[in-house]
Length: 140
Image 1 (spheres, rainbow, N blue to C red):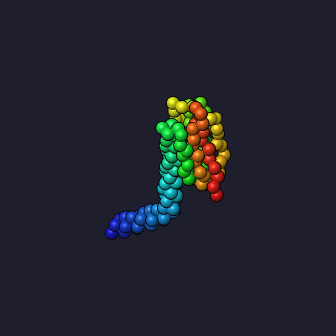
Image 2: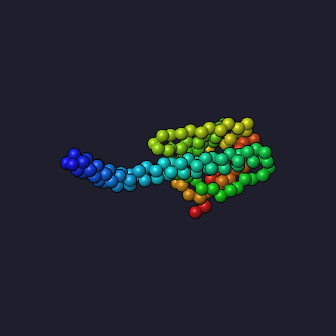
Image 3: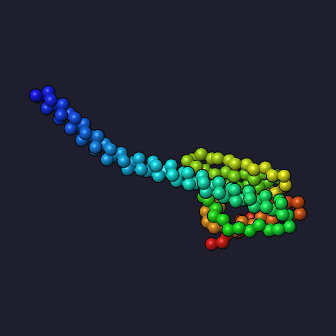
């Protein structure tokens, strides 16, 4: 009988310890999930921005007599370089630097966007003689 009582007390104590441990660890698990979700959202915002600039460049190449203007949201921690035939994007996610390089068949006017604060800009892409010019005009 005492053996059964000891087992039930040990099981009860184990359940108590497990309950306390799970109540302590639950907020940390929620923060980990939230951190991963924020990182995914950052990557999506970078890709949306990069694709928007890529579409602007392709539009200007296909329509050299037209101007491309669009309001865009510039993400944080993004550096952009346009030189020769290259568009280079550098961004930071989780303390790692990622590079994405696009190569085009037309030449760019050399321009660099570094340390720009994240806010709304007007993307201005145009074709000047034989060069593509990209400019970001601050709106707000």
